[in-house]
Length: 221
Image 1 (cartoon, rainbow, N blue to C red):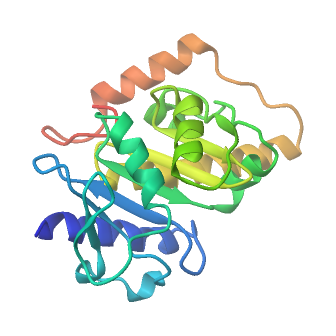
Image 2 (cartoon, one colour; image 1 turned 180 degrees about the vertical axis):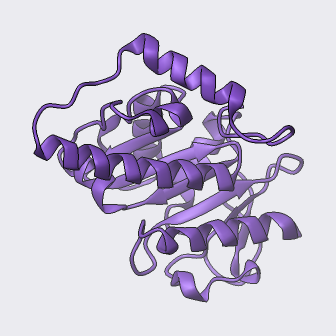
């Protein structure tokens, strides 16, 4: 069942340690099948090196395990809450990547000072209020902060990114961490100047129009 989606979700989970976005077994990627509405997600507590497509867990929108031998990620409820409330997304990535999470630890947004992340999400990276553990409060906090966008920091927790697919959500997470690192380093040297709103919009629209090959969809197209 959903073999291609299992392979994609597994591959994108492997991208997290490859890009230093996670340690141990923390963090997860999921993807939603458009036709069935079923979700494929990483199993709980399994180290990334041990993941294969066959270890992925298939669940329905209510969290029932449809296929898989293991328990789904402890964050599955948050993923499901976001899927229930965002018909436009087909993938979610959650990390505790160090530079981005350092902003979350301070309850601060990542300002839109760099074009690469602005190209992808069309704004700064907002930080939510503090959310108690559990799917509803954390899910609500993410949606409140993201305001229809593709990324949010959760105060004192970490990073959630979204996309049309698991691959796109993970790509946003990678660019977000790079932007957080570079912004942090720049802020050590003094004030940073945020891009004007009209330039943020222009960058976002330019990227949507020009990035990638014909027939290839980016997170924003």
